[in-house]
Length: 88
Image (tube, rainbow, N blue to C red):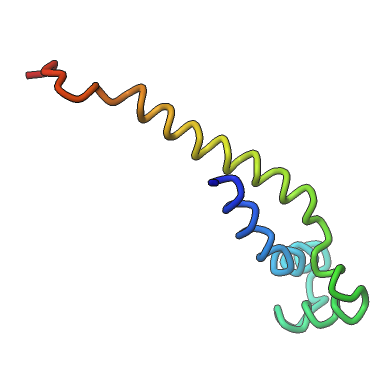
């Protein structure tokens, strides 16, 4: 579930990241975020706004799955069982 949520949230922000990265490589290319989104949309259509979503999705699916999956495992392993009176 964590991996799916991480993938979906980062997939939604892919167009913003695309404009940001393009602006870092070519400073001054866009007047602002909305100008960048509209220029990319005009040049490449809706699919152009999601360039790079494949690697992003795979990376965040793995990252989210491991982070949240390992969190639960480590939490269970590091928490003493109920009724354990150790530490008194």
